Image (cartoon, rainbow, N blue to C red; front, side, top):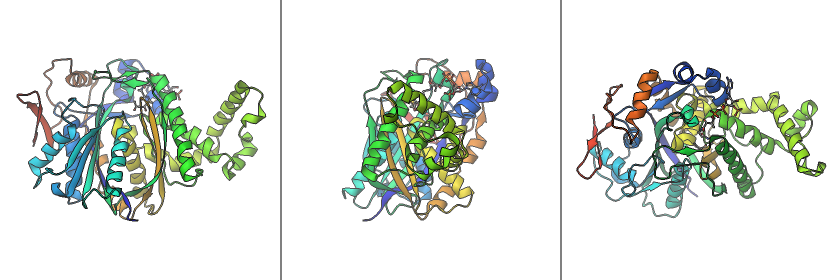
Length: 444
Ligand code: CAA
């Protein structure tokens, strides 16, 4: 069967940067360690006044289509995944297509366009839709363009303000992919939850501490569901485990629980047993409380072992590197994590062809999904073409006062007249409003 998967991806970061330990923490009266050590974040990327989900998504897509030499009429569907949409009827994908048609030859007249919504997991759902479309043979030899784009801003003084970010990831999905291929096995953990939502409002209502627990619970169910399809996961099955990364500290929590689960009854459990004992089993305890207390002690001790720390440093840490410097991109976050792991491997000269990734996506509300991907020949060239680190380096560094103005400029409820801080160059920019309230864009 012909492989189907991601043929290439591109990343576009918001052009402003907020330094969290140096600029944000002192203004909030926080210890910088809360950001760098606790949350695992050093900086957030922010959108300038001329940037939004359309400009960032179209800029990422344009770079991708040019690099992969794909013409508009070779694209059979465009799906935009976002939780920052500004229109309840007209999908963001039509705006993105309109932008691309300004500069590329041809048009997307025969592409099926849509918008995907389920908080941060919808980027992965759009990949699923594209995969199913190709597998069903309805693609007529064409590829799908999936764009995950968000301005992940929280209300001022919300605890989530520490984890903000803005950026887009564009991906091409088709046959014989150059980056990773998908498989049929996948697992879901999905329940009606009230952890994070935006009921007709721009900034989210968040129960932050609860959202962390819901992430862990749904992710656990998704792993178990995945194992029921693909068999038990072993710690050595995957080169990397890119997970949805609202902040790296969240993945650190999930990774420890995940490792405890997948190392049970393996040589990994044997290797740490001399130091910390074996994992407590439910049947060894009369009461649930005693079992839970023993499990917590074991997990705390596991985190300190060399065996766990080596595995974490190899399999998880590389996937968090980019996120530390850009914050949460909601729908794009897990795709940034995938790129981050592969980028680290390419820089270290590792050959990953044929190896696997265990990908964990999550959307509040809430749903987790687990699947694996196989790294394809061509991955290294694809990943080396990314200029994301240059983008991060070239961002305009915000002062706290500028941050406050930029946050206001992106607050739909406030009228502000804020000048741009970075200079747009060969990119799409927001260009004001049309007569029906539509947003207009131009390429500069
Ligand atoms: N040195 C070292 N560590 C420090 C520290 C210091 N000086 N000060 C604090 N810390 C640690 C804390 O111990 C904590 O770590 P642990 O959880 O491991 O104990 C960490 O830094 C954060 O500190 P707090 O818990 O006190 O921070 P907070 O309560 O202000 O906010 C948050 C944390 C709830 C995650 C908040 O940022 C938030 O609401 N974020 C948005 C919601 C979110 O991202 N949820 C994640 C799951 S939901 C999801 O994934 C979907 C999505 O994308 C939104």
